[in-house]
Length: 242
Image (cartoon, rainbow, N blue to C red):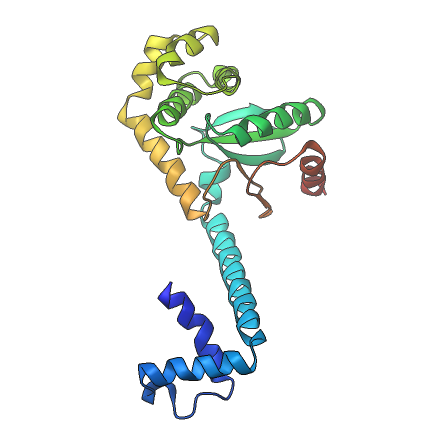
């Protein structure tokens, strides 16, 4: 907080108010100069805050673009991810999700509708567990299915998404109903291989500067940090085709 405040106040003093030099001012003199400046022209603080926020936004965008380029293969060509839609689709979209995220449940319904009219859409699902132990266990189960039974991954994904809240105790039943061998899948889910994959997804999530689910990432750098309606998503997909 103090560091951020200085980032705001130093430019204010630099507007002709820093005589003598800032380095020569005592703490009391510094505070007095700031006080006098803000009393004389209070709009300077607003302008400085706006500028700082804009600089932060541009820095975040630049870092996202850098990470998108560096992590492109990890995002779009990792063979261990679960897939919704067409596995060979020409339109790709990465989807970070948590099975206990209500906004993910809402977006999942939108994705199902969009897939009906977008046969070339390939949704690369990055399962992460950020909403507690049950979310972690559900994510690990889904990641295990993506590796051991990729053709049945989407069915398990939808079975998990259909739950109002996924609980670890119900995972075996959910897997069985999705046509999977729950015991074998759970053994895989508990393995170091799946633990590493989950950590890999979380590391990627954080490297991109994301802090919540759902999040959609497209090859051209388009980012949707949160749920989006069907019309909005179709507009983005139309741009991906052009």
